[in-house]
Length: 208
Image (tube, rainbow, N blue to C red; front, side, top):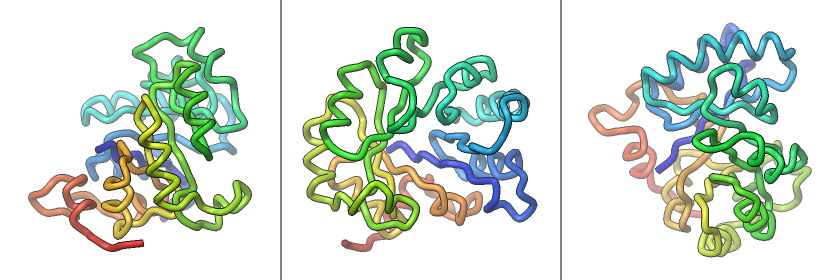
């Protein structure tokens, strides 16, 4: 199960990206997406040069939102392409594996196109209603999400309105993992006791 945390440094009490990422690494997430759209190129690069080595020690993959060039220079494991961002095929052509290319998708057609163009994985959503994803239309719901997962040849990670009570239902629908900002930001290292983060999330139950 891929636990994919997305940063928003405004959720940290001090507004400190490095502190937020350090907390996420110690929480035990699989991947971290650096999604700080207001930072200039230099600030992003400097942040990544600090984050990447620490993430490597925890075995966590770091992806940068939208900018494969800065991601590579900064030591990231890959890039997360917004649905309106650079074409997947163009990025894949210039950034060979093992550099990861992950794409944001909002329907099964976009998932299949991303896979055909060389994406390694996609996020798909919003699965559930959430104000931040309102511009993308109504939520998919679990049945449409399940269909997309069944048709996709690459991992599909659920995104949008996912809290700890919904993780198990998203995974049961065929997801390879879950992505979120607030869900992970609201947790603290070792909330799960002796169990791993994935087991902790899966055991929270809940239905939709």
